[in-house]
Figure 1 (cartoon, rainbow, N blue to C red):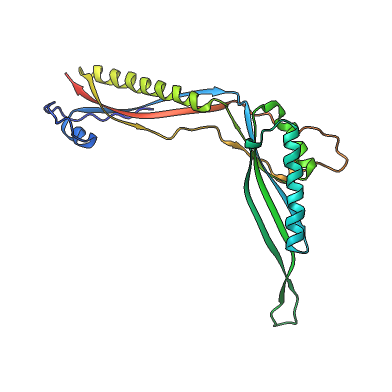
Figure 2: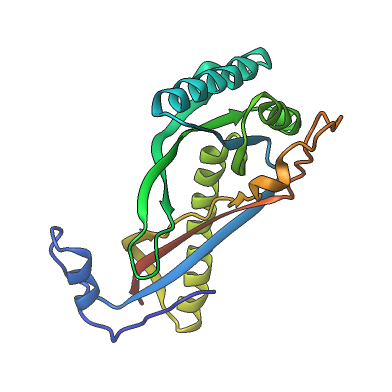
Length: 242
């Protein structure tokens, strides 16, 4: 999809220091949006997992949860995940408040029943073939919350850079076709406005669906991502000449 704006012909003389908006006000111009995209099979996965413990006291909840979290981290390391790829995203310790029933018309009595500690980790898996087994192992080691899995192409930044170049060429091709149809030519570039790139989205799961069933012999959770689409868009404005 492209957008085109053509204004009436005026003098092509302009000061070199003029802004893009000033140039567009004084020059005939055309603005076109170019787009480029490609699909690639993701080769990396980032796991978002949580370890949650509820105990009668804050100290018990925090200490036990810390031990479970360390067990999960140690297991990840044994499976080849580098320390820099395991990140602590959040830690919370909150009281769980309950209310004691009271006589009709009277307010109930609130009291702290227990405490809940939660550690949240993000884990980058650079070999997507191992992601399922590593996630299953994390669940077996004590991770009782799985917030999602995000898939990505390892060299995504380099691929997007090439797509941006392709998007500019696409915009130029469209603009040249429009200009030639009007008997005009493309002159200097006045403005380039890259739009937000669209990287692949995250694949989400419900935590309870991932919990290992009692006695389950499963050694790997099925993670089979489809192709991920990378998209780059850019709007370019050219001055026009005869």
